[in-house]
Image (cartoon, rainbow, N blue to C red; front, side):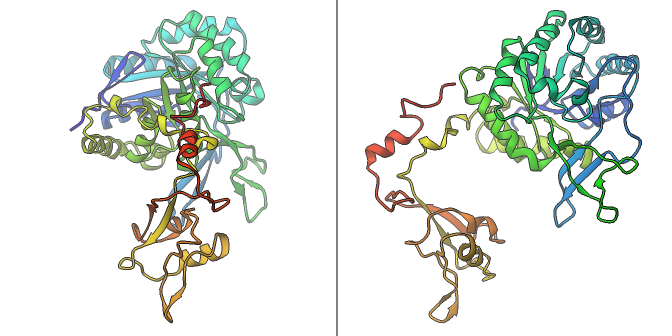
Amino acid sequence: MANLTSEFLGVTTPNPFWLASAPATDKAYNVNRAFEAGWGGAVWKTLGEDPPIVNVSGPRYGAIHSNERRVIGFNNIELITDRPLQVNLDDIRQLKKDWPDRAIFVSVMFPMNEETWAKYVPMIEDTGADGFELNFGCPHGMTERGMGAAVGQVPEYIKLATEWCKKYAKTPVIVKLTPNVTNILPPAIAAREGGADAVSLINTVNSIMRVNYDTLEMYPATDGMGSHGGYCGQAVKPIALHMVAEIARTKQTAEMPISGIGGIADWRDAVDFLALGASNLQVCTAAMVYGFKIIDDLSDGLSNFLDDKGMSSVSELVGKAVPSVTDWQYLNLNYVEKAVIDQDLCIKCGRCHIVCEDASHQAITKTVNGERRFEIIDEECIGCNLCTIVCPVDGCITMQPMTEGVDPRTGIAISKEKADWTTHANNPMRKES
């Protein structure tokens, strides 16, 4: 089987899967269980100044469930650790002694003054921890106190705080970025300019999940009042992948190592992040929902995938998909695909016909020669692939390339020269920064 041994910022671990900074990494008991289960590392739940903050005593989490009651979106209003700093430091020190082959990075969040960083960074580093992760992403609670996303949304603050941490730290520093920005590149560039050794992303998305349908108060609530929280879980993965790929494909940030976070729940998610530029993976929601034993499926699935691709290590997969990411204007308008329905697999449910009639281009028949039969009308099909998404039978509807390309907006064939120019690889105006 492929070797999952991973190196990130000079720290070697049995696999690239680390627990993200969260309730599951708040104490030695939990992290020890995780390491026993096989996790490669952990980012300690965010430490702050003493005395510790106070969390709410009541519902802290909200969720969006699928029809099968599976958690697909998760929200929390929990703040950083509410345990005394010294208790956390003692736990970290003991775990590093017990598990020298596992990574422990410590998430930290301090006010915007150098004196605080000068005081606490050496104290934390003295535990033997492998490095720091600067929490510039928390969108609730700490933002109102001038920390978390309040720093992560201002590139100048990111650069300054990173410089302070690097000034007093001897170990690597990761900057954790917030997705609550219009463009992830300025914060990433600021982290690099501040001396960050890597970035991790994404932190949680600002959100309100729902209301209580009995009381018509927002949920979760504390004594009748609620607050926006951080959204995570599988539903945020597309946002995370976009931001990871932007950093990986942009000249100014492409050389920065990336720790990918946001919706990793199975090996396919891991492949997505690695192929789009991450070289390390952090997991939170899935571990909270399913427990630490999911590491078996993550590791086995990734190892089997690498074997199938003829790859012997994780590093061979990192960034493989990045060259295929471009801007819309560089897409090849001479390339055409259309849907094809496998009649042997079709169960005649009609979902493809309904959505194509109502929301697309009326390109699927309902009857043929008086019989209920669904077929693609090639001259009407624009290749949008909506039918493949709604079809309940895997592989029944597939997209097949056509031999001649036509601009779907005009119906006019485009010359081969134009098609070549619009590809990213051959375009002299391709994105460099």
